[in-house]
Length: 235
Image 1 (spheres, one colour):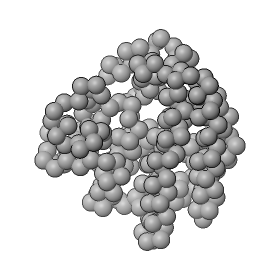
Image 2 (cartoon, one colour):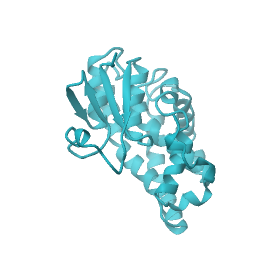
Image 3 (cartoon, one colour):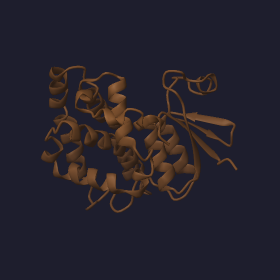
Image 4 (cartoon, helix red, strand yellow):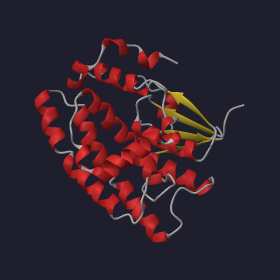
């Protein structure tokens, strides 16, 4: 029997992973359909105005696009709530969730650099958004390990995929950046160890991510083993 929710995805998409983390954290059963990035089917294009993932199909009828809208919808309609109950804390969470676009852009532009010179230049810019987020973690008023304390929230789900990809990149070419920010580093470790985050991707996500660097002919791919070729086709 099909689940109430069907998530449309690319295997490496961090924005889809954000939605999957929310589904996992809430214990919501869902199906996932992986589509070809280069041959996006007509039925998908009809549901996604930007031609992007994620899209979640509800009861086989209604389609909802954009990861933030999906996360908020799920939080409003399925218990337990992941947003804070306090209105001001909830607003702060939403504000820092909005910052994820800047944070994600800094990481993505680094890992997809075409040359070593570009890679180093982009990497040098990571300290600024990392520092801002580290400061926010210092002002959160709790001991963690997550943004709001002991429980995973929507803001955690938003950042986890990009901290994971920074970690993948750092393993290929150690950057020594996140180590400068103790609170951010600790948050990263807590997020990557969270069951909802671990269950939010294909099992071989790091190999699939590395293979994507080869397919896209990025500079970092020169440090990737040819053993990962075919990873995206693995079940």
